[in-house]
Image 1 (tube, rainbow, N blue to C red):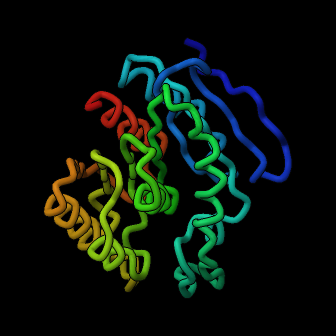
Image 2: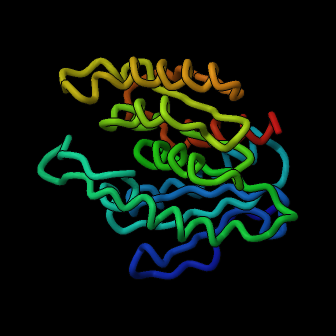
Length: 222
């Protein structure tokens, strides 16, 4: 199976759809990415292949504005002056168009805010066979309450977090450990098969490996 990318458009990033793996594979992995992710995607695809062993197609779906395009609703800035504009619904609508083959199994995942977006997307549709959320931004204002008030429409969820991610003086981000534990408790109570894995290090350590582990685990379980 080739892991080289193909079908890349240059600009704008939201029109990018970079493919890795076997274009005819039954299992299709979808990940929203920013320009900071693209240099690591080929490594991630190779790691998924190593950890999983089977065929898959990984679709890296480019977004132009991380905070705007992946946030489920408006929220104040957490880092710097850039607030969250809440356009995840628009991004989800575009991604859903990629899931149009009933003969395939679709999985959604991501890292950081993209991981949170993957969870949000699975609340909107039952098309995804699993969610692979690596170091997701579970601190996002109101998201845990959203999980309590709604039911995710997938059977399997993988969550992970670095064991140093909550060790910060930032008053919002420091809640990430508490929030991800709450997320697992909510999903468990709703009868969803949910795994929570703790990785070594802070938020910026080995995002390609962490995301690959998340996808590979979901694929193996299914």
